[in-house]
Length: 173
Image 1 (tube, rainbow, N blue to C red):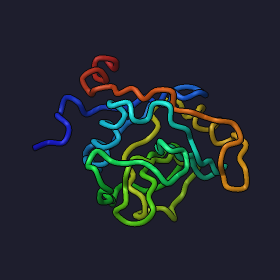
Image 2: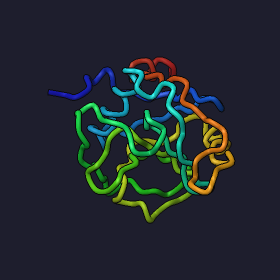
Image 3: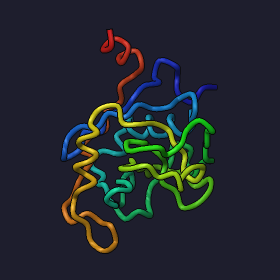
Image 4: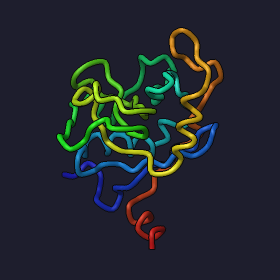
């Protein structure tokens, strides 16, 4: 049984307090991870969550409903395995990947890279990229932080909106 019906495969728009970020999901390379992110977004899980960790020239991290970096869950009710694909590498800014606390500990937390981070290859599941809104990601990466990389000003995902693949195809025509 498919986790997400074929017609539901698509992208996600993160409407943040600093602007919109559209992420394309790599369904063929990381289907379980994409299904998790997509369905959490569809259920409103990310709405109102903050970007709780920002490291300039490295990454911005969100997806934790507690805002602490220790919370979150998956659609599978427990952490799920990594999906490393040999063709996917942390080669630049705008890569979407799962944050984790070690191998096979994926939940709801994710991050977007601000620069190439090859030292993360095969340590975090890459499951998408920024399709639109890279300027927003870059502005997020410049938000002032404290000594623990927590933003001094609250930056939120106001709403996560799913865009089914069928809608994406209509927009491209």
